[in-house]
Image 1 (spheres, rainbow, N blue to C red):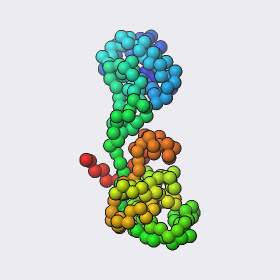
Image 2 (image 1 turned 60 degrees about the horizontal axis):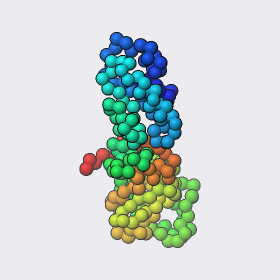
Image 3 (image 1 turned 30 degrees about the horizontal axis):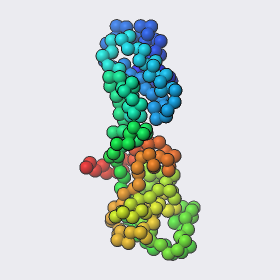
Image 4 (image 1 turned 120 degrees about the vertical axis):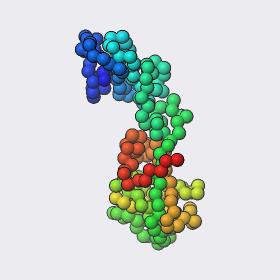
Length: 223
């Protein structure tokens, strides 16, 4: 690993050029882009510093581009690219428009209830029903990685209906408004809106946090 400007891990390019790796058998010489998801001069600076090391070691391959770096163009590909978040549907660059998300969280309805006008939902009474309404309580909460930042912002879907999250997300429970889905019953499943770029913008979390934060309490169902 060569540190070409991120100052996180690796040896300096000048140490490589100075022969620090001489005598070592190196399969892949690597570096990592700090801002590949942004159009900034640092990308080209890092690429140039890394390209200058070609032939300076015994490495048979050179690798620089992560998921976002792949979309920067062929000059960043070198011999080997390293897609990470893109494998799960993360889209961090316009060049990722063809990527399809492969991870979608779902939750089950534990209880469906009628909340009267003026009734509150959840901790700290942050939501007050403007009229009589139908509410479903899901077996999902911040202990599962569905964090409190989704309170009053997130949503679920069932049968084409959009079901907004209302009130505070609890540790194990989340409330959604289900007037738009009269057929939903206790035991039914709903799909959480979790499109990575859009959910990242909504929550303030990175796409990486959204995926890695989904906890062990989820059953993984492979389609």
